Image 1 (cartoon, helix red, strand yellow):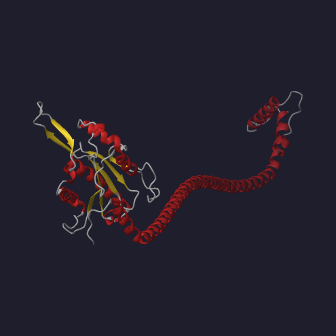
Image 2: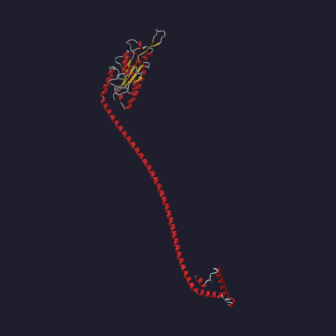
Length: 388
């Protein structure tokens, strides 16, 4: 990979000597007027040191050194302006995130170096421009130098503006060395010492950088299109991934809902099944009890029928025996009736002693019959009673 250089360039037209030149520098640095070749949509200038009003900032530093801005030496040096930058490749390398991080670190390093090199009392303004092809910083420093005048009684230290403080012999080479050393952690190197190359005017340097940038604009545009297409594809893929995740969440939620519904239905079915089985079991036991009752009733009926048949058979035999006994007793009854009728009218003395008990029994029988019947009723017919 080609070397990348730390670049510090002072104005080829020399130091700023008038307030008109100072205001002209501020027009460019603060962008108080549009810049024709500025990148459209780029950020505004960033003031690392100063307020954006270069004249006011320089005068404030002069007053801090007890110098009256309105009583400066005519055509004397007021300030120097330098451009701090680096090779274009240094700012272009890496991803967007890497470029932003590198620019932030580089920007802070420029301010630290300038304040350390010249002192805060000399640095009036530092303005970062990123709206041109190569990011760069405009640095404005005052050539303040402190002197003691031995001829004065107070011998106080007094500040004055001395151009050679910045541009004296060997000063520019010294600045180049110090600046390159400070930027070495970024992988930036110093230009070749003694190469014969002179400092370019700022417009020439920026024009050369712009030409170099235009040479790679086509590649950059292609890369930008590729990055844009890749970003669009990535965004589309991300959108598809989010859509898939959303649908997966919906499916999972629906599956969970169906699972809950299925669990509820299954629980309800199991409850209904248990109730149904319990009802069937109750009915079964009731049927078995009824069948047992029916079987018992049938047994009892069969036993009753058997008993009834036995009783009917016994009754038939008893009836037959009764009929046979009545037939046997009928002659005896008739004879007994005749005997009783005959015995009632016979006196005990008229019968033989052997027959007297029979006659007495016949009379007692008649008395019993009469006592159990109504007084007006006729004496019973012995033959009829026996027949029943």
